[in-house]
Image (cartoon, rainbow, N blue to C red; front, side):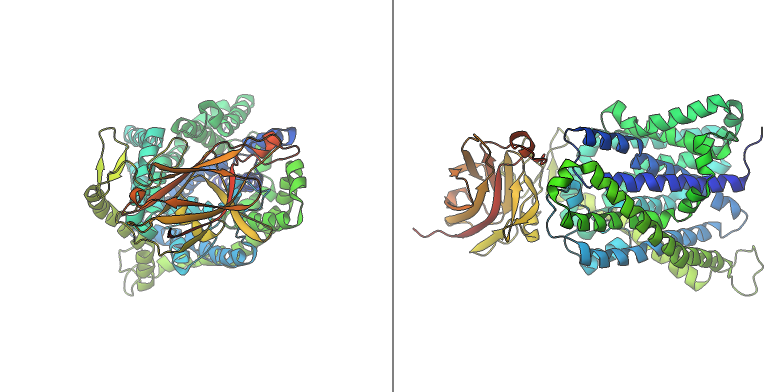
Length: 625
């Protein structure tokens, strides 16, 4: 039996995108509340997120993208300006709706953004969007060199990065023998496994964190390159897999094909279960399942439940607007959730989390669909249509199909699109190794990094058990002026609190932040050569029969004092001796006698955090006996 027609295939690809859009928005709705506890509703939430797997939907998107980009280059294969046309169309396709969505997000954050995380929200929800925006942040987000204004735009970054090298991948897939294509695919998969294993990721994380002061606003670029190496083969699979499936699908159509299709779906969405989390192996399993789903779905004549869904007009419509839908869904979910958190009792949310996220999804989906439809018809479709007309304009006196001079507007647009993506990685590749080697030494173990300017073992940011590494600046920063007041609940305090702190909260007209776990760390450049008085205001987490809370204060590895923190919000003072201070960044560590989860020790509590002390403020001043 012959395969489906090209028109049917494209139609089903759009429907696949529509199904994926639903999976992505449902996943993000369910991530709004903490669901790492116990209970029947939380278990049901986990099961729903397992089978409506947003990451699997993204792998389907990537496979489809590789396939569709190949078709795009096929159409203009006979034209000498095919690659140039490809870049221009990709630029309009990706950036047009993205830039408009970014403006909408900036306006929405000014209206719905919150300074502190709602108590009933998950930790992840509190980190979805930045607390403050600046023109430079907007510029780099617009260029897709950062994604903190729209976290889901990391997939757009990957699409842009893969687009730069895609013509080369296309050339190898269309003009090379099968063994060459297989070797390239195996090589790309090998790169993914090499980059994605935990040891390499730990090394990359350490090096990336260390290079952040050097890279500044370009600190996201190493993450881009890492994602390209990790996911690059997914696009190549989409580009090259169709011929094999054209031969395979007619042989397995019917019951066996349907069974294999459902098995592929099940394996793809549960891949993380087999490997204990996200690994290169789980990604490979997920991609195999996604690839079978896509190509069997677009080539088969079998009419099972999934194929009927792919042929339904609703999913085709949703697939057509899926790009705009994807761009806007994150901010819509965020704004609606923030509004609901302001009017719904946190105790009700904790008691019925499934009802809350279901209501959130029911509100978010139609709003996002309406906004996505408007964006598609007013932004996407007109500019995509324009991008198809631009490459047809050639210099006068040149026959169609001949290699004439490109129009100025297309040349300028191509340069604007390509410049940051070529200049920035090349510049980093040339400059970063020199600066890195000049300022660091690498131990024989391969992972431990330390600055040459300050090799003392008590340096700020030395990795502690259960803590998070924080790399000190390459140059000692200027000491803070005394007196120096630090409000822990203020967003400006984040630069001084590298690890051991939850997001800021507000209660009783004051802001504060709970400590996370049994240790918190504070890094601040204090003036050396003098004794400094530290006054702090704190409140311990207490519960029935709780033991006394004692905070051990260490300065640069030296134990200064053990302070018993009494119930209630109170002030305490200690003296930081000059002998313990350093000429660079000073590290204050607070070790707690106990840290407990309210869910475990308080009746009817749904808070799963591990709390010890709530910190309101710290003030450093010169000590005068």
